[in-house]
Image (cartoon, rainbow, N blue to C red; front, side):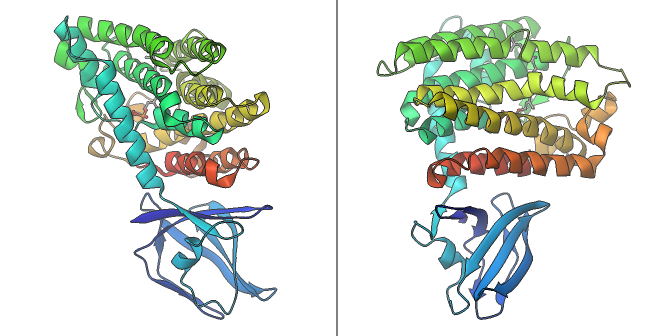
Length: 389
Ligand code: GRG
């Protein structure tokens, strides 16, 4: 079992992941540290370990992402795992991020399955369900639910909107894969929608998912949620999808194809509109439904802006570093089509550094929240930064 652990005090937050199966012991001047792994399998390197002010301080690092100091009494004989799983208030609390994502994924899949039954006309509904239930990491619903819970709401309040975010995301993938757009054969490890159902049905399945997403928020959200919050969510989502959102981003992306003069500013505009805005809308909507104050909404919006751009930067990196099997979609396409990407414009190493910086910036935006409640969103920033597909 892998734990994401953090130590929290009134002044600071220490946050890192450890594998509980790893054996590590603390002693006066040395920690026997067998390489820790984070929840995505990446090695955690011990950047520094030394005694200061009678305490042993260790700074844990993932790649270039530095975590803050973790102090331990030199006389402590506890293992590091014991230390990080101690009770709260100045001590540590274990948070199992993998378990969190797993349980949200199961709940979201169940809700999506129920929301769109296989009814007449069967071919259309089969096509909608084929892509919607084909897997996927469910990052957008998880962000929506986590933001709602952060400000005091519940999973149930956020679920219809969380599902709507996944419906919009899925329809954008169906349309993105069409021959008139990216012309892709594989998505989520399966043949693309138009390959199975034909182009006409794929277009219409996307259209039906788009309109149903709005209906679902309006009809299925708990009656205990004030209607002005629901209206605000619907308006946010409309803005997110249109000409100043996904559609605008996709059009700009297509117009830049084959243009070698695309600079970082243009690329950032495309990435923010094509990808970030829906992640941002997922977080903000969760916050609105959960009753966040305007100040809290601004905070989580800034977190989401970093996480959204981070998502696409990592997507660019994965395209050149992973295989089609690992990604479940055609890898190396950006290179093949000579598309402007972060690795192309900055170089791979700089793009990775930029990704780490965005994750760190995103997490800083949450420092004013209760660290225990913020743990899922903090974990999601790392998950997006270190994801492998
Ligand atoms: C929304 C009306 C409307 C039309 C769609 C085609 C289009 C306009 C926009 C393209 C949007 C797009 C496909 C952006 C790429 C986003 C991206 C990085 C997708 C990959 O998301 P993951 O990794 O995928 O979350 P899974 O499969 O895990 O859900």
